[in-house]
Length: 216
Image 1 (spheres, rainbow, N blue to C red):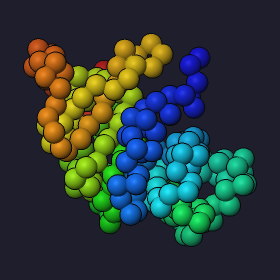
Image 2 (image 1 turned 60 degrees about the vertical axis):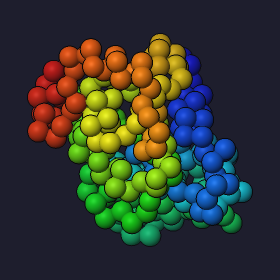
Image 3 (image 1 turned 180 degrees about the vertical axis):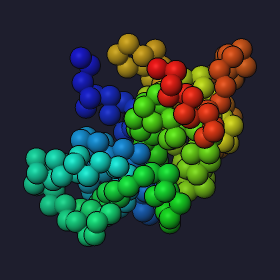
């Protein structure tokens, strides 16, 4: 009801402050967890098409990539091999990497300045919301990274915190009262830490994932 484009702008374009921060780096690198219908890429390209940007997007469903290519021919996305698709303009490069994000991150060579944590919900895909996953993201993050997500779950926030991120509240959207932003620098919001200390929720870890899905 509130619009996927507006939500993308709020959580990822504004949440990661990409317009404000892109000039701080000679080559700004963005990691998107979940290419989906390509909306994250479109809005990012609209915002940064004239800047030196590498956007890497992980996607596990080839059908979604094919759908985007067929419905957005103006982007001329080329299939490099069975696991890599690429779009290049004068300054902006998009790489869509097909496969399991938990495996793709292990061979990632980039250090990212912004992370769009837009994976399927923790209930559907808990392995992309665990302490171990967020530690992998930290290993491939620049020191001034900002990660943004729509999730405000206490369990997920504790996972991020346990991995080493500093947390602060993001903007509300629709029925959600808040969202989550994460950095490696600075300190977590005092009020958020106090709330998490009171919460009985546990940080999500890999070994808990199967039982976590069964709770639905």
